[in-house]
Image (spheres, rainbow over the protein chains, first blue to last red):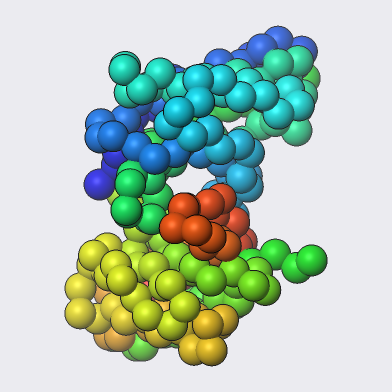
Length: 111
Length: 116
């Protein structure tokens, strides 16, 4: 079963704009990770944020985590055509190493 | 170094046949995970290994599914008597399990299984 919902399900923006995706989850977590998937194949790890962290940056990526609201957001700044992909959040809880994935956001960057 | 590799990349089989899917984790990674991704179910956990043992098999959908890992490295996922609903992309991931804390899981390219 899916742990979380991602919002929006699909997003199309112009190249150069910022893209924001949201993820909500249901249970307490140990950490939350964001992954990118191109063409329905392998997942590429983007960033991991631990439950005691509130914000993390990596290059053009900014992730926030609000454990009180059980939600996270992924911001991609200055988007590029190569950012076109599906983005998934995934959580794991304490003592349970498996990842539970959200439903994903399909991001399309229009050149 | 090399990432997680999976073989075959694509597998087409007839209903009722058995299939074996292989995963080579990143060298030195002690934990190995199998997931599958299908249109109707999204990404679902199947099984995970710590070394050669499988503490969590809760995601295996039926007793037709089994997995093993030998030498703390390569893993094989076997599906017996395949059914059409087994059609999906099967993804393998590995991570370095240190100090009892979970870590980033690195995924392979997946095996696309089509059951006719």
